[in-house]
Amino acid sequence: MDLNRAKSVEGFEKGLRRLGWLSAYSRQILMTRHLLRNLSEISYPDEIPRAISGEFALNLFRCAITILAGVNRETQQFSSPYDPPNRPETHHLAFTRKERIFSTSIASGMPEIHFHVGPDDGFGLENSTEVSFEDGLFSFEIHAVAKNVGLTTKALADRRAEALRNEKLWRGVSSRNQTYALKFFENWYEWAGKNGAFWREWYQGFLDGKPLEWELQRRVALIDDVIWKAGPEAVAEEIEKVRAKYYLEKHIDALEVELRKVPINRHGIGGNMPPEPLDDVPIAQELIIVLRPLEDLKNEISKELPDPTQLQNIIEALTAALNTGLAWCLKKVDLMVDTTIKWAIPAGGTGYFALNPEKLEAVIAAAKNLLGVL
Image 1 (cartoon, helix red, strand yellow):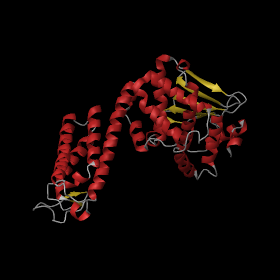
Image 2 (cartoon, one colour; image 1 turned 45 degrees about the vertical axis):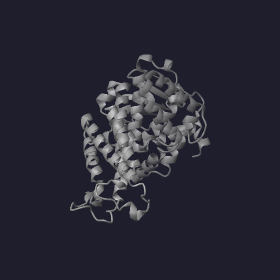
Image 3 (cartoon, helix red, strand yellow; image 1 turned 45 degrees about the horizontal axis):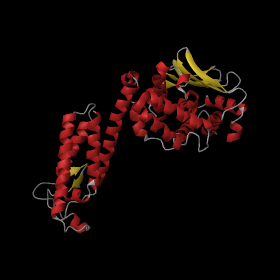
Image 4 (cartoon, helix red, strand yellow; image 1 turned 60 degrees about the vertical axis):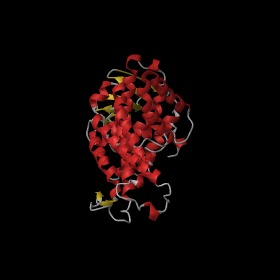
């Protein structure tokens, strides 16, 4: 189905009925994208009771990130029931099937969406005799995912829906509602202050078709339920810890990849000590001064609650190793950046880090960042 046909009331109704044929996973991804495009309907705080606007928004964000990051496939925190059961006219996103969050429907004979603020409260938009551009996009994506999919080939739809997560929400087409949806984030940011910063960046990723890394999103989605219920400030603080640890781990991985490339220098392994293995790869002896605190760092951040004092000690050890390498470089002003000479370094000289400090500096900076948010 092309986008023009999907923008008819009949096309929307066919799309909504076909949505019921898909697996819960595909259905939830499609519904979540529709939710994110329709934030335009709550772009002004006055349309939401002021006392619950922050918690309401956070509930929407949690639902979306849990589904799109794939966490919901295991936890099944959010469901997608539909009414009536003898083929759907209304689809819902709900928390454990009971607490409805968002719905899209043709039950009234016309397309409509509805946000559920509480068990008996909410607001929505009935499109009268028209299908909105967002409704048309929703129908178009349903048909694209469901094309040639039957009862035995739903896995094909799941793969298509998974790929769809990286597509721009508006597929590169300008829409007034996209501007209004961003207005929602501006208004919520006004309410939440710095506690809304992550979510604004998160949403922009979907607008650009460049979502935040899925592993980072998965970790945010897995934040403990107690913290989510504590409100935007508690969630924002935890997200900063999650992000800091995630990026520190990435910098450690990058450094270790680099270390695996370092051969034992041509003078041997430096004295009588054997080379230190890193996943069974021999490492030049002069790098032990870095390997030991690096291993300590990995062990510390693997804990649920890293010890700030221990983390500070490790940062100091890594910084000392870096400074040793830089001091060594100053003494060797005539050092040529020739591969043969580059590795002809006395044991303990940490000459490698004199020539290649960037990845170790990145690890130190990321560790300091984590220490600052603990």
